[in-house]
Length: 322
Image 1 (spheres, rainbow, N blue to C red):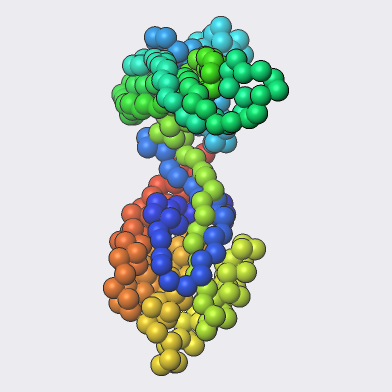
Image 2 (cartoon, rainbow, N blue to C red):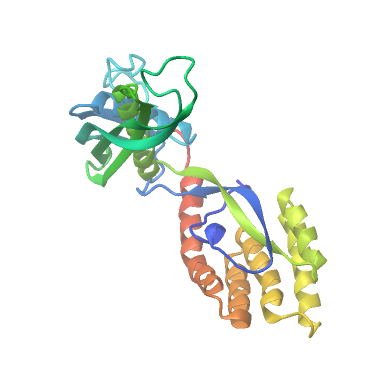
């Protein structure tokens, strides 16, 4: 689990000084519900148009996170044994309804200047500018659903979640009708996005984020640390960033905003080695030097990140098979 941490804003905050490098890091996020050791989820289905599609896609999304085992109801998944057969018993059951499953399409036209042979002109006529008409077709799929998660042992709601998503597409043509838009494909894409959003309420999940680190030509240790961080050697990066901070503190010719870069990088490095209190202290040092709100926002986020990481870690440690 060493490759995982939890982050909300720090990786995306924007600093306007120094030269930036972006390091991809995999971060973990906890589920919204309290798993309580549960590892098996049965999806009972979603009523309404698009419900079957959402049922299958939600199962795929949850399974794709690699934490929970997913059962689908018969006849979708005949591997699911009937009640009392001695097969796997779900800890949670998920069901719900589709609140929206709509597709809208419209067209528009506008004049523009084209260059070539005007319609109806002889093939040997000279090319020229002329007014033509561009036709555009636009389509939008909108889907929404409410999912209810029930703790099988207690019979109580573990959570009720509503999400909505939309997908759009356009097609254009000059002087003729634009090609059609695949309505079913667009609705399916929207359902896939909806399923991913709901799955993140039910299962711990992870993503790759771009962590922003700073370099400065007067502090070569920053560049050395960034290279180590890019290789995943965060402990070595911390050594280099500390050397940069020491050099900056002892050189009156280095401006405060440049000195702060070492503290920004240290804050990030401590964050991704889960040393949250030290990360907060480094971001605060950067703010004290610059008054830059990016540092204060990063410092303010670390307490929340610490709590969320603790939740994620507890969910990942819970025993399998329940």
